[in-house]
Amino acid sequence: MRMFLRRASVCAVATGLFIAPLSCFSERSSGPGIDLEGCDVQLPSEAFGSTIVVIRDFNFSPAQVSVSPGSKVTWVNCEPAGTAGHTSTADAGAWSSPLLAPGSTFTRQFSTAGPFPYHCDPHPGMRGTVTVE
Image 1: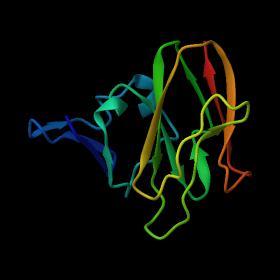
Image 2: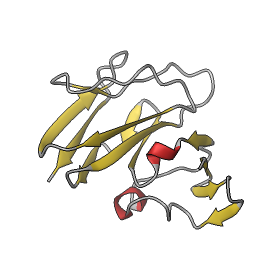
Image 3: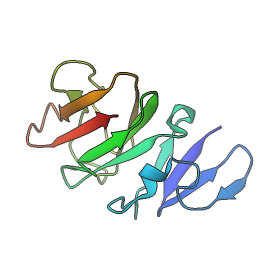
Image 4: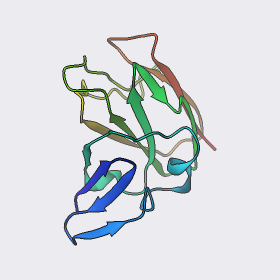
């Protein structure tokens, strides 16, 4: 199943069914601070059920997310075409995404409890934390 983010809506293309805004993501992904306006990104099936972190204006939004063990987080690069790519890289080395061009995504599942601060390798001022509790 392929999904698309476009103007804060999620569509399941395989079935042709329109799904209400962010309804196929966890309740944490649709909270305040998530702004998908103008973001036209195709989400892979592994992103289903993820908490979404939007990359826009050289920031992670929200910068702090809390998830339960076993949950997934998906970073979605909503920068305009032509903007430099970003990464999601754990400060302690637990993960490092490939360079995410605008329109790209990266999903990681978190099994271990604790705080996981991360940054963007090319732009170290971009910082966030995933807290697993």
